[in-house]
Image (cartoon, rainbow, N blue to C red):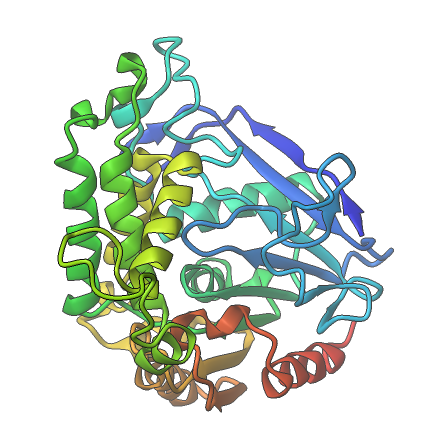
Length: 368
C-alpha cells in the first residue's frame, strides 16, 4: 500500500488547556481507504509517544519506511481499509510534521523552541476535531489508539461524545501512577541537564542534547518491555568472551539500550519529548470530578473496546479494569479483553492471533 503524507493548515487560534493561545497550526496526516458516500466509515488512529501520522503502508520513494501499525491497518487486516477510511494524524507539539517546537514561531520568524506552549491530551483532541471538520467528518465510526494514543481515544468520547461511535482503548491507563510520573521526570531531567540543552534553545546554538535524549530513550525502553521478555531476548548473554572489568558494553541488553538511545537521538526532538511526557503526566479525566472516574465518564456515549496485556507493568491490566468498571457504572456497552502476552507494554504493537482476532471481529461488527 503506497501512501503519501498530507498537511492541513488552520489559521483560527487554538485555546490550550494551559490558557496559552496557539495562533495558527498545521496537522500532518495520512489517509487509507475511501470515505463512503454516507461519511460513516471514518476511523481515527491516534499514535503513542514517539510515533507519527505514518500509521500504515510505505512511501513511493521510501519503500523501507513502513508505517508503525502496518500489521494492524490495511487491506484485509484487522482494521480493514477495504471497508474503513482510516486517518492517521500527528499531534501538535510533535516533531514529525505537525506544528511543534521545531516549527517557525510566526511572532519571531525563528523556531519556537522552548517557547512552544505545553499541550495536553485534551488539546490534541481539540486539534483533531478541527482536522475532522476539515475532512468533512461529523462522526467517527471509531477512534482508536494504544498507550498515549489510547488516552486520546478515551478523551474523544469525553470531549466530543456525539462525534464518536466506538472508542478502542488499548494498553491504557486513565491516569499515570506516581511511579510512571517518576520515570518521566528522570527522563526529562536527563534532557534538561544535558550541557547542550541550553534551556531548550539549542537550535540557536546548532547543537542537539543527544546525551540526554539517549538516556531518556533507554529509560523508556526499560519500561516498555517486561522482565520475561528481556530475559528471553537478551538474558545475561555477554557481547565479549569474558567480562571486560571496565564500563564498556559487556551484556547484550546494554548494547540494545545504547543502540536504541543512539538511534532515537538522531531523529527525535528534545523539546517535543519534554512536552509529550508532561501531557502524559497531566492526563486525568477524573480530576475535575473529585477523582471519581465513574462521574468523569458519565457523559460518554460511545461503545468501548478495552484491551490490556498481562505483562504490561507500566500500564497494568488493573488500570484498564478501572476504565471498564467506570464505564459499566454508566451502563455503557463495553467489551474487555485481557491477553496473556509476554512482551510488556509494547505488546499492543505485536502480532498476537487472539489480539488481532478480537480487533478484526470488533471492527467487523461496526455497522456502517
